[in-house]
Image (cartoon, rainbow, N blue to C red; front, top):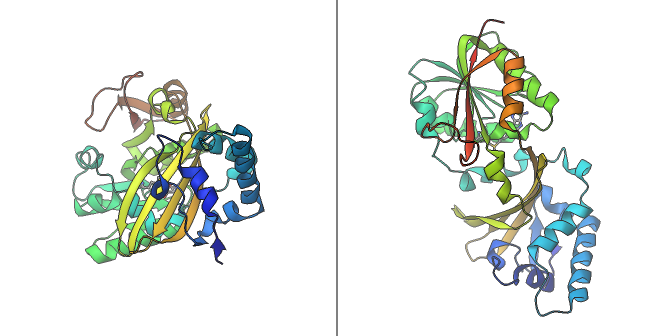
Length: 334
Ligand SMILES: C[S@@+](CC[C@H](N)C(=O)[O-])C[C@H]1O[C@@H](n2cnc3c(N)ncnc32)[C@H](O)[C@@H]1O
């Protein structure tokens, strides 16, 4: 389906002083093909948002346009929390994910903890950002992800690299293996995508079950005290990334945070001539989990906390300054 976008709306959204301009937010494309999960924006619901923005802008009667902060507030008012809950749709972004999520900062941390032949369980592996280096290092990995789209990309990459891994499309809350793993890793702070204590405990229990006695689980999360300053409704550019047929631009903003953060992420695709081809709005939620709460949950399922690191160089966790919490948990006798 093709949509005609409104040039004035584009201008309203992007010409606020000090905020990223058009290429980094919405494009004034004449024709936009909305991405799979982006259609709501141009749907009746989207129209409501747009009308609210126009109304707010008119009310201001100022030369300044409506800011993204206003836009964020309006969008979160219009998009009810309950409606967002089941919207994390990695299938919709699987083919683009590697373009904008190519971080390598945690490779050394994980690679230094594995050895060739070691049976490693990688949870929420996605398209294999970490799986590929683990497989190259000789680990015998089992990659679990709930998104078949993400796993299909990983499968292609493994094939292309002549590498092997067991891929399992499953929810990490409900794992059931015939084998036991020496080590389990959950990278990229993705444990936070389990929203609610029940899901978090389910996952911890099933990961505990999957490990051999004295096996270790490395669970990564953001430090809420540090991460929270980004949850302010302000649109930030993740970046502009080259693709085989042009480039993509990723922007996003976050609201909430007490404890659930709602993130709206826009992924726009442009062809070689710079014309917008598609737009995806990815709605995500993640939970700020504080140190005490996680420790209590981990211990309650039988884990022993052997270390908490505050970054990927292995520095000790500092509650006020560390960007992340990397938990090293050991399976002890129940
Ligand atoms: C931010 S991506 C991270 C992917 C990969 N680990 C990386 O480092 O690039 C989060 C991944 O977690 C997966 N995921 C989220 N909730 C999950 C669940 N309950 N069970 C399994 N996978 C899940 C998503 O499908 C997605 O691929």
